[in-house]
Length: 476
Ligand SMILES: C[S@@+](CC[C@H](N)C(=O)[O-])C[C@H]1O[C@@H](n2cnc3c(N)ncnc32)[C@H](O)[C@@H]1O
Image 1 (cartoon, helix red, strand yellow):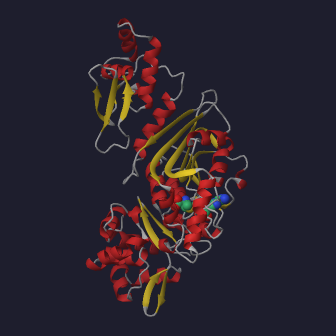
Image 2 (tube, rainbow, N blue to C red):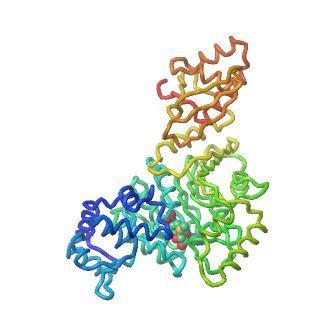
Image 3 (tube, rainbow, N blue to C red):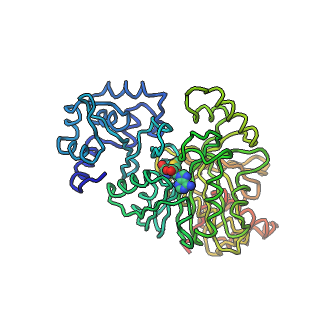
């Protein structure tokens, strides 16, 4: 597939004029977010597009609903030249007098990504993964600015490699599926991004290479089904690929670097996910490990959503149930795992938070949250005496009980951080942090009140980890 720069600009202009954006598409289809493209809702999607006859509906039908449209209808939106260019490079084809798109087209922030059609997923060998909820979550949660060398493993359409290149990183994209790499290459050119494309089984071809950002949306569905495709399942535990990815970090992630992985993972009796991630890393110092849990799905619901309705459906369902029970899987988490590499002498810090799937870009917020985890996760953290900590803007208020033995942080309305319970000492210290008093003065008053110095540092650090304070170090 090749398109001239002029044809690319022409198509982008037409898409822009039709408002072919994540938000507008979600609204037109009647779902809260584009991530809810679900084949069970196809009748609703067709209905909504037929009801409003405008360029956006035409483009959605063509590129997302795989409809055959008359040349006249498509021409009214894209123009004849654009149709000719898209036909020449194999994106459009004609069948029984109608025009069809061979590929899906997803808007994603400022980018546009071609993939295989989303509701044929699982039916063809070499299928290139559409932009799913997982793809959008990783895009919306991972901050890339200021990073230099980015690696995107399991790149599929190249979406994350292109996002990183757009943010100014030198970007490398890897996939095991050569067809995916053709899409990634085309998408990079289409989005005027420079991405190095490499066919490799995870890190195999990267011996000795390091990066300061590694993104990945790996295959993760636990399954014994040999027919399930490579973009979906890595094997029975669902963790064969993610384990190798994490185990490769000591070799490939630089100090100060960030690993961001979106996935479904098995929730296993008596084996916390954070502990498992740490075990795979194989080091107990130098890492901050965070699990941002977005959703938990019961086993039966998850299986139903991930096996295909074909002959032997019930046997297949039962085989999955048996396999999940054998593996001790009691539910499936949907999460973004962030692993930061810090100074090798600092003991590991691990924390999980529960939040919801972001409906818009939350990169800046997670950048802030991750830097507080790295800063306060260090057990030897001592505040800069001149820093002026204040109540975090991410929370609306601090509630305290009558006996002053505990507190509750009430999040702002649109906050991604859940309300946190804090203990009496944290609540006391937070109440004193007015943005005027320096950390040195706060400590002095704390001790004058007969309180322990150690308790001051402990409460300070815990408040930091709870995202309850703005540290105010910049003003010193
Ligand atoms: C869930 S898709 C993710 C695609 C894309 N990154 C996204 O977020 O939309 C998983 C991708 O992993 C690739 N993959 C599976 N096993 C792999 C391996 N061992 N090494 C490299 N890529 C692999 C598949 O070909 C597929 O493109």
